Image (cartoon, rainbow, N blue to C red; front, side):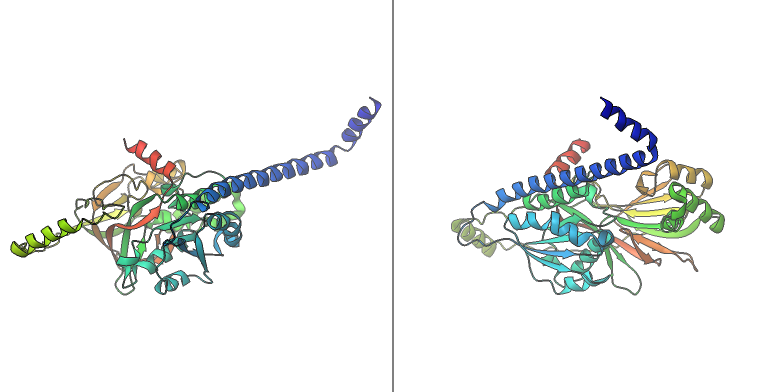
Length: 422
């Protein structure tokens, strides 16, 4: 008993050292527990992948080949380590023959896609920038119709992963997000996604999966990191300083758009079986004796509607946030008006618009279209955000390519989205 009293007396007499030791031990214990949870997640994912690797294949079949486009600079240079620890073992245990191609500089993924050979699946390991470069390089190929049928897997390794909530169930654990995304590739469940084709006057078209953003809030979001020294007040400070510097925030622009078109019927995900020989002979004889008459296809002239609008923020987005919802073919443009600017800014903070800008729909104009042309006023400067990547603002034409690409999707996430639409 005297020893216990002596220990407590020592802790009381050296309370500063004791407090520091408790803080260090608590942090160390929390860090070790997190490492243990990560190992458990990796082990469980590897056990699931091993079951896929043990499945027998026919003698004439071959192992599935996957081309991985990895951006080592993503996630502050941690992407390569995250991929090697959490994704590569799962793919190897499942018997997938992977070819890892690492990018060395920004924009290289577009050039690499020009020389990519046919593969069973394409895996993008990085963030929004890497994904956009890959799909842009893929759809710029002359034979993009063939390669667009290749299923694409997205492993979220970047600081911004806008497409992940549409494809996978997200959590606060980075390792869990990576392992679940890799396992969804093995399970083979895919979903078609729409693609935006954004074309300027001179440059080649850029392709996006989520959308285009332009306006005052976008410009402010790009400057928030400059006020890092203000801590939790940096977001508010960036908006107030920008408002005082650039008031008024209103920007005038002209938009011409086409009315939404009915969405074509979904194509079958599996190849239909070939009919037997007798059916094929009968069909050919019918076509020989009664050849089908090809009617003249008259293309209707596109009817563009034009509007002049003032706005604080403009969004042109797809419906890929819920890819299982089969809506009409359209682009949605959210245009926030110039009225009550100070009130809108306060609403902006309350709704955390920098995280999900499309949730701010109060007092906004919503246009639905299958294509649109955006004309900026003379002397307009600034940048577009296209899938969280900066591009110089200029007049552009945006067209929607329906179900252009197929992405691997988590079965659990698909069931969750289907339940929300019912």
